[in-house]
Image (tube, rainbow, N blue to C red; front, top):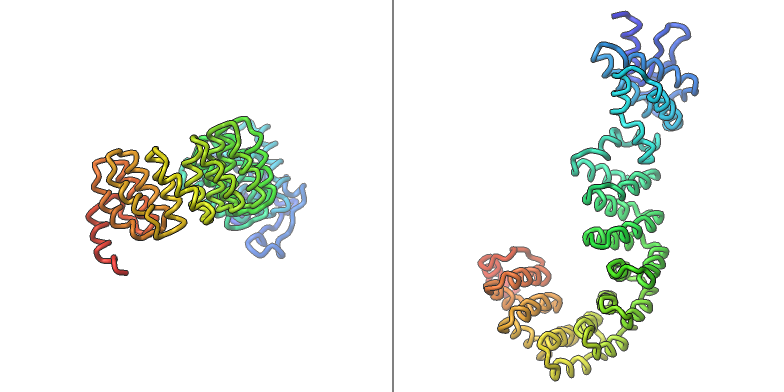
Amino acid sequence: MRRETWILIVFAFCIGCAHAQPKPEPPKLAETAGSPETRKILTEKELKATVNSLLRLLASEDYGTRNKAEKGIENLLRRDAENFDFALSYLKSQLDMATDHEVRRRLEQMGLEKYSEFGITGSLFQSFPGIIAKLTSPDLETRWEIMKQLAESKHPDAFTPLVKALGDEDDYVRLFAVVALGIVGDSRAVEPLIEAMKAEPDYRQLQLRAAVALRRIGDETATKLLIDTFKNDKDVMTRRNAALALAEIGDKQAIQPLINGLKDSNDDIRDIAALALGNMQAKEAVAPLIQALTDNKLNWRATVALGDIGDTRAIEPLTELWQKNHDMFIRLCAAYGLAKLDRYCKAFGFIIEALRNEDSYIRANAALLLGGTNDKRAIEPLIEALTDEDDAIHSFSAKSLRDLTGQDFDEDYAIWKAWYEKNRDK
């Protein structure tokens, strides 16, 4: 092999570019390995000449030469963030004109089109080697890792590729993008996140993660857009998700629109408004929720919300509902509200007793509600409920035990029992 060719290969592999002809002298790029201050910024003419030299090497019949030329092109793109866009554009133009099959294949494998598609800048390319290969990898763990790195870096250009991932065909990748945007905390993510929520109202995990992301971003725009969605969107599920997101964010601007939602013509919207107000512990909603106790389709949710808010104004109406209503489920929910308001009231014992009700639906709801009471007296009865013949009751009891204790022994009665015997006096 000619000496000049070896010189080109060494330049291409180690520093990113070279010229094939001894005259004019090829750009001296050894400074590339040093700090940005010591590097020579190439002119557009020099860049074109260097790319052309590397493309000639890329057409070589020698496999090693082609590999090193490809590496040289990658190094060239990484070398100067200032010239990245021009170098990328020129490479893409050469791809369009390339007649050599191997050159075309190699350039296509480099994913030149993807750089523009994902909004990759020279600075990102320098900071995250192999970024395109990682963002488009078939391995989900690889894709999550690069998105997390982008998010945690707080790099000013990380926003665009993460928003692009919101449109990925893979459910998990879209979920990763939502979480990553929450970590970035850029207010520009508010509208894309809300649009992602609207696009997939049935994707529960995405809805929850998007709500958390919006809370982390903490931009007032998010509250306004979600309120508008809750009030005006035609899709009921989208409105429900907006209400839950508003509760997650916790902005008081949402309280009155949610209170108005208690009188919505749609049962599901009234229900979710009550739930959201309870989650927000909105004391402004106590009086409207007490009025809602007369709504036969809403009263059970209103009782739970009143308990979660914890305002003593609710004690009297909840007591009346508990003592006089003929529906066991409504009485159970009223008892939950009372137990939250007054730890020593008899209603707590009523819920414990409901764990032995002949109706499995009542037993299951009792097990679930006990987890929200924050009352440690519920631990032993819930452990015993793990022996119930109904699998759903096992699941709800285990969840409530996790909520009350911070422990997780799944639905294993023996382990829970042993743990309780060891820790009952602590």
